[in-house]
Image 1 (tube, rainbow, N blue to C red):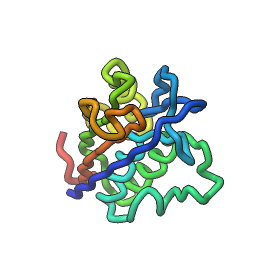
Image 2 (cartoon, rainbow, N blue to C red; image 1 turned 90 degrees about the horizontal axis):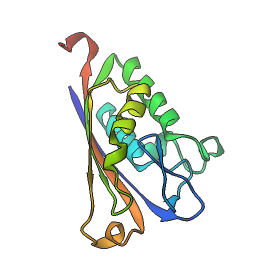
Image 3 (cartoon, helix red, strand yellow; image 1 turned 180 degrees about the horizontal axis):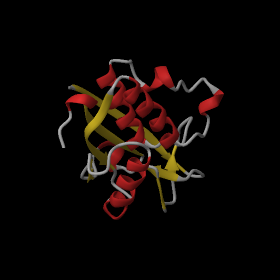
Image 4 (cartoon, rainbow, N blue to C red; image 1 turned 30 degrees about the vertical axis):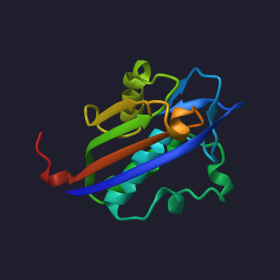
Length: 161
């Protein structure tokens, strides 16, 4: 088994769609970034890359490369899942947290789980929690959103169930 941890944060800005966990969430602001700035996908990608021992998301998807400009982070996640399978591994579990004061994430979590499953994380192998920052810091002031994730990879041949 291999374990990795990931983190991401992005600034909230006007004029962008808010995409989290592959789901567009109605809100007056979106996240600023080179790709779609999906903090949950980015944290999960970083956790998986960490479990693979392959650096970080910036190494695989540099913000200096125009190929990744405005790309869906779900596409990036699929590419990393391909690396998992190429190493005879499988995502056994992902636990994640979205930190956002607004909008409330709870109504979108089931849709996020579905989008992440469609990207290659096995159904039932992901947990998503949502927390506010109790009005503290950049998250509490609604200046940005962050996410953390931990991932467990397991050998395909050793997985039971």
